[in-house]
Image 1 (spheres, rainbow over the protein chains, first blue to last red):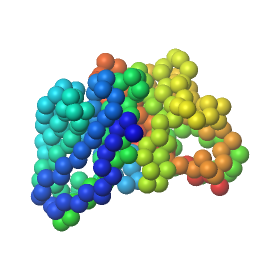
Image 2 (cartoon, each protein chain N blue to C red):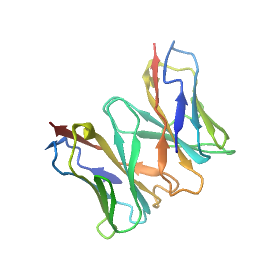
Image 3 (cartoon, helix red, strand yellow):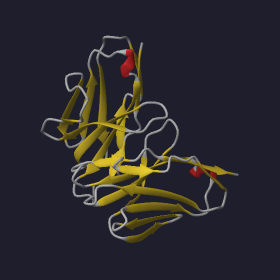
Image 4 (cartoon, rainbow over the protein chains, first blue to last red):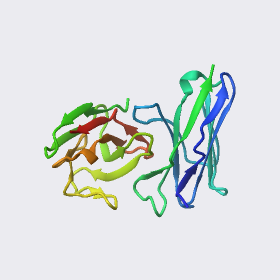
Amino acid sequence: QKEVEQNSGPLSVPEGAIASLNCTYSDRVSQSFFWYRQYSGKSPELIMSIYSNGDKEDGRFTAQLNKASQYVSLLIRDSQPSDSATYLCAAWGGYTNAGKSTFGDGTTLTVKP
Amino acid sequence: GAVVSQHPSRVICKSGTSVKIECRSLDFQATTMFWYRQFPKQSLMLMATSNEGSKATYEQGVEKDKFLINHASLTLSTLTVTSAHPEDSSFYICSAIKVDSYNEQFFGPGTRLTVL
């Protein structure tokens, strides 16, 4: 079992729709969770971080964390073609990833005009 | 702020030569820097964790004598690929964590290494 699992996709949504990206983690002690966006050929960029159970909103992005279910999600509202990228979920601070983040393999999102 | 730079952005070298890649945090001090490698269409692979003033911690399977890491200050870490071979051709990316932050990683733009 991978420490951080994501649906590999590809996930395709029409422009203006809500894109939903999911992530589960195995290390129950993990403390912090992050979503990064990576465009093809580029390095990742941080788009959201979440530390407490519940929702966190930033513009069109909402991150959701449920520690009991060991589940993290990212919702992108009003999806735009420029949102087409690979989204990486990361978990920090567990037994197996003390002092570093463990990344999922990413979910590729395509937003069709 | 939270800008991380890498230099060079692209390098082509001959087999057997050494290549040094610099990673700088431009507007913050970084307690920890990380070095990753990424092959085309594959996921990020952590190579090592670098803390200022101490030896780097390498991930299992990463040759520490081949990938030399020096974290000389709170704003600079370097990765030297020694005696590079074609199989070392990859996209090398560094990231940095701000002092007193919640462990958010800020990534550099990456260095594309091609070994001929």
